[in-house]
Length: 521
Figure (cartoon, rainbow, N blue to C red):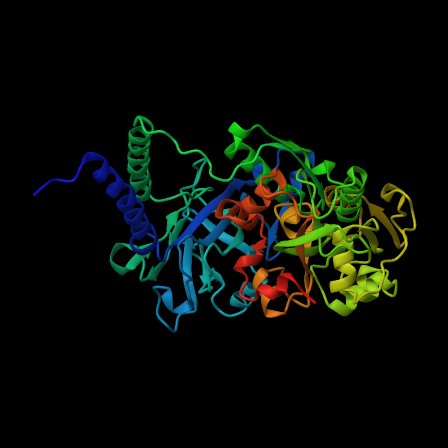
């Protein structure tokens, strides 16, 4: 029997190693794991270094001043891959306490819950499971249900045990366990690091995978096999225009096309998303460019494409639309608004000027400042069509957003999506609108749910989320089949182009369960 070749064995290992790592990490090593971290353990002497902190030395218990108080901040967290429920704790069913924390040579003067990863966890501390065991320096913590990565923090104030003279105290002793985890069905509490990556066995598997991958790469690149040339490349300069919201997607796909078709001499103009002028202006520029060269008959421009949020408005008969992807939009607010959900009716009332303060919709007492895209923006048209039922946006009250009065309701307009997001993040009480992919990852503003619905492609397909639009690629006439514009459109429709669309949160029209969503009547 012939033995498999070396490269075949490497390929098999490249598949087997990640499978083994996955099985170990998710099914053997970390299904259920309860962890703790001591985030602070300090005495009043150590804490009171500043002139204003001396009050720590005068803390009292039952009217008596604490002589040598210390403070411990304890974090309890679910560090495994499955939820922990009350029945998982290894204490009797009639015992409401799930965790006990003992502080050697100290007694507990008081304790308080300082942080909850979910507000719903607070109900778990209302029963008899949370408290102090008198006389033995033990805190009792209840059987709290914890989803994956959920946590809570407890701050304890402690008093030194009389007669104990050492400068430092032994580490707190945390006693608890859960059923169904590591080590034969019981898992003891273990300290967790501030950043959890993977278990040691999983890291060993990953190291083996790296070795196998490098070996496979060496075998691949040292073979003297000619690399096939791309089959559908066209060279020249491709001029891109249109939607500022969709610009990062288009430019990333164009960059990959340029690298793939490098041998053809491809140039992309522009190269920065900030140079896109918006859907309306982009369509006007495309129409003007086509009219200028006066192309005969059905011949079209082969070097220009404009991307638009939704169908073009107005009479431009030579502009031909092609649906590319379904794109999600979201409202965003400044963090001081206190609002992360609005009903569709509330949004209509806000843009109609009937609601001018966030306190009227459950937020803080802050005037509403509307930051909108200028007329001609596809994002703005989408907002009017999909959310406001055709009612037009209010007029700007100032020419420059920085001139908005912080104590008075107002409105301003900006030219592109990036500026919109920056203004919303810095203007108190600001409300704006953006393509979801541009707003994701911004921690200086909040996305807003509509009628409790987050912006998801599934919500669009099910008809529960209203703020979306079809992204169209427009050409002037029918571009020649061998032109760079036609080649780039084909590139967007193949797997590589569709991968770029998906990576930005868009859904290629060809992959929709209901394809007609991309071409609404």
